[in-house]
Image (cartoon, rainbow, N blue to C red; front, side, top):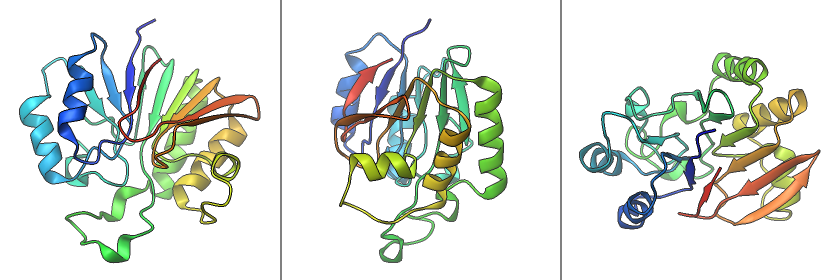
Length: 199
């Protein structure tokens, strides 16, 4: 199979991100929170290649007017003949402090129709690995107990996917903590900011 380097939240720290992609021979998938417009414009200028070697799955710190750009993984995508599936999105709990259209976007989470399409896609594709920005509620409750009590449309969707289908591995970011847990037979792995792993 084709190996990929998975890179976690960048948050505009482009020098470190560039260092990671320059030191790998593998194609990469950045799992969300690359940054807002200036970071995405930087990516287009400095990273984007015709073969789309480096891809970005959008989280809740991304520039959503660019969701349909070629380097974006869109709402969901499959890689390596379906071995890997990506699912975008997360909720910004601090959105009241943000400016819509600059650092917050109404479509940062999948809507219900898109969420249903994502579930159907997973069930048809049957990936070994799911990569998402946020995680199912059960993973959050086990791995970050005491840190949060809020649920979101995204974590509910991912919970529904986990209920319907168990991949071997589930990789996510968003929580900025490097930790693993085996939950319901699935190996969950959260990556801290700018952590990268090969799958």
